Length: 320
Image (cartoon, rainbow, N blue to C red):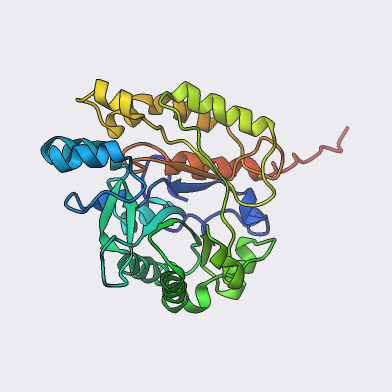
């Protein structure tokens, strides 16, 4: 396995010690990307439907003011999807939407505004990357779905099945790396909509522990409280991402979500290094963060899996 800090973990799953190949995938530590596609936001696209009326009104009158602010606070990743995969990210937070007044059936990712890249373009890039990394497993968490009617849901699900084909893992209670490799499965798609119930290839929504806090200490406190309540039985995500409200953004015009993340990351990283994966209460599974290439994130998360390896017993000395 690559040494911590190298930033290159493109085959980290296949390089895990064999003792971990038969452990449930939801007991491993897996690095995740929060708002994974925010690196390619289209600053000329309209605001998404769910944005506040106040922001929309301001954006119509003063776009020269609002757009730079939106860019600074909505961009949570700098590396593209292939670079994130190569860095070691295996869980992707994908927020999907259909643009208003768009006569086509093209879908985009969103975070305040829409992305330049379409959903299909990015999914094809993931599929191509997986072809050259046959033992790596990705989890695609599809959610939000603003503007999607039933027909668009069906077209999206059809695209997922077509693009990933036999690599799409159907929903089941227990998965291990060995069982996935033997079956040729590489893609787990969680789908946060009732449409998923009709398709065995889709998994239900994966719980995301979101603190909705501005301060690293408050995020850690929230996650500690959730840990005390016990972990879910399957996959779940602990979000290390910070969240700024409108009031904070207005009061700190020179800052951005990037400067906020980097300023707080030392505290978050120190807490993260003390965590353990596994099935027990208080253990973590997927950990999602922002600006995953600008901080030592993937290396820390992946290294947590060493804690799952049972220490070999020391040989006993029978000589007296």
